[in-house]
Image (cartoon, rainbow, N blue to C red):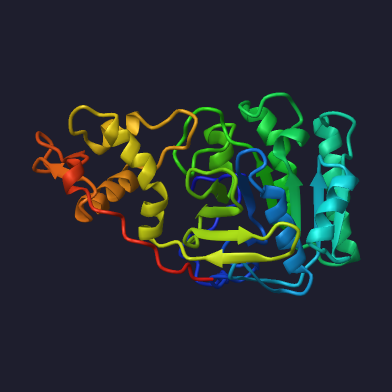
Length: 336
């Protein structure tokens, strides 16, 4: 018989209890005890504001962005000063259930210093439950200078995994890579980071404008992930409102960008050709999503489709002549 020093079990072991779906959620669908989640968004998108709203909701439980929260305790390790957090909590009050560790290191921590901090965080369980640990952001606490180096990432993520396995949900805020990336892959640091975490969250501006307060939160998870949610924060208040985000509304939000690409083409183009033209400073949609927008545009008479949809003769799209172009129907009221 072959022997091994490593423990194993049979996958069909019926004696092992199976955790029911949803058991252990700190924020239903997004953050679960035992998981490490990564939230990526461009600078000043509102990641810390979103975190503060979540911390506020954890005070008494209830719901945040339409998903249930536990009444739980949290620790935030942040690169921001106490003054910045004081300004934020004036608008979004957070109770005594949340503790802030502001700028615990003079520079980047060593692997030993980072591990020591998280050992101290784990010790808080002796004083009571620790439901959420948030690190804001990854780059400030990375024990090394490159988030593309797998060894450096493991020095950062390994201690966080230990905290998670003790029964805490871990949320790490992060910045995107500079080059254009598809949704679900925008995090800086490459595949090693994205492959390690259990949940990939991304925060996006809605539409092409950058001045509004409407954001879209996407999730990819080892479990079934919630659908995208669009929310709006009222600045200076604790109000986060969920608004509708149907496929039709996303098409309307992005139609102007697609129309500009079609207008820049002298001949009808496939959706992949248009995707190659997507502005380098904007996150491109998935190819399947762009095709859906073009299909909707053609059905509404906003674009003309030609071709047979085969490999040798793919569908191509172009703008109709001005005399054939209909107006885009007015949107109805956005549900709250």
